[in-house]
Image (cartoon, rainbow, N blue to C red; front, side):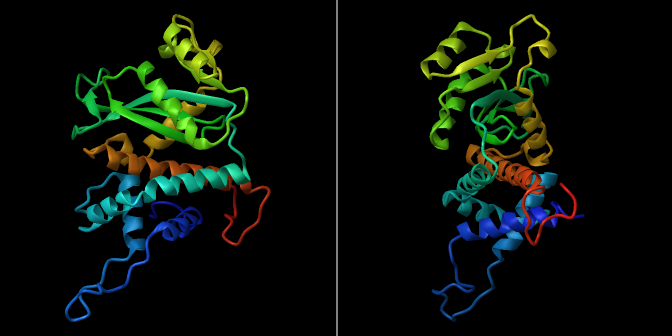
Length: 274
């Protein structure tokens, strides 16, 4: 069974390949002018998708995945890949940035690591928290990683800092938050940044005043469908961010294809709306 359908994998690879540096098939400094061929970038990319989707071990895929992954992280490939997808979505469908949702999500981190902490919802086991931010339709705009023992509220400021990389914002921006952010400190933070807050009130039932924050909760569910993120064994924060960037790119491109399906035609267009 393929990790992702071909109508999604092929455009992802086409853009990813453009970001990769050009390398010769054989190393130029080899004394005999030849040696074992370098494993192709396409194979490593497919294996990374397999790792992300199924959460399998590195040893079960290829020995060179770690080194190639770290090489691409050092070149900033994954962050640029995600930004290209966001720019394409904004150009074709349009990011709706006047309605922003921010929320935290806790997942397991059995291996511990830089971004792990004692989880209050898993008997003190190691866990990972991400403070995610989305636009009006749930397109992931970024995230802040922290230990599972961190409260959502202190992570709001660094999450909102991610808006600076999105270009000019609308004049009137509303941030939707759950009851965990219901405090005067949060309202003062939003006022300093010129943002409006729609915050659920503590002690009141959520369905009556849920607002638009369900979009970020749905995006968390989309991200947790990638087993590498739902049960994270990575110990370094830069590697976790790289896998999140890859997952966010997949979510963004998939949403773009879904929205463009009714209005655009192209050769690899799916026969049915995805």
